[in-house]
Length: 457
Ligand SMILES: [Zn+2]
Image (cartoon, rainbow, N blue to C red; front, side, top):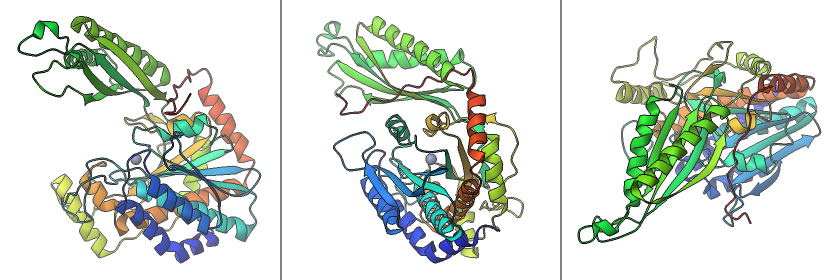
């Protein structure tokens, strides 16, 4: 059984929490532009009696995008982080079939994450008051997880420094599982080529095409992939590729993500990509400017924290869904999988997954990686999405906007709250977490590249 004060808080605030998740879903915003989401999230926490500070994570003149909300005094200081950025080109109505609309959509369910994690800190506050628990609970509202690296700005500015440990939840199409994955180290660079424009038909010999350089660089990278280990991922898109076919493009630019298993190999990978870029510039007689935005680490899970988290999960009652919710999910399951769900494989994940008891490599990255190298962190994944539906798809958006997602957010939030209270009640665990993190990083190459602030002098 979880703490009665947590249960009571969720009982009394279910509607309010769901309405918050729905508000974020109805107002999907791009990373670093989560102005409405940030304001609504801050207002929720202020109304619950938290001390709330908001700020713009990148230091832009634009409105605030990040939140630090605290309650309590002294150690241990337990943080829970939320995200609220949406994805472009994923606008979708909350129906279990394809019904696209303009704009952004919550295809990664970050509206659920924000609602789940915000409600978690509120429930922790209620339990701290009821049981006189020591310490401080902190909510960190983090912008731009999807490639914008919001947490790197916040980490560099010291916003995570006050924490003794950090907890988080992310919705997913599986049962609820502990974070045991060593996610990938990720780098981001913008590669610009400068050439010479000329009439493409009348004076082609006078032109030097920046677009040619981009294309040759991408071809070069295709060949490079063959000579990388299988845990490397490189992907790109065009940021600029010329305007008209009859003008040799004097400017073209590429957006590159490159990922690998650790920081050392990611730095080395970047150096190899640079050689390809400069080679393309040499071939085309253009100039290359290779702008590295960031390199952040993968995630470092800790078995000492996972153990406490798993004990909290085991105290949770089963997650239940109605027939209508299963009907909705069945349609999505079929749309994505091509088969019907059955008794063995239902369309909605509701269970707690048994931990593997070991950490293992998995593709994908998240900017919380940079924090896990500094602050002991435990995360849980799962629930809130229909089984076999692809994340970052219309089906994920459709699920994040209704009660299937909202229920899961409250469920995961309660589990996080219980875990946070267990840590507050056993302050001696903090040094165990910190020692384990130190041990696991010993001898590892830990240099990350932090993004520059736009307005930095
Ligand atoms: Zn996500």
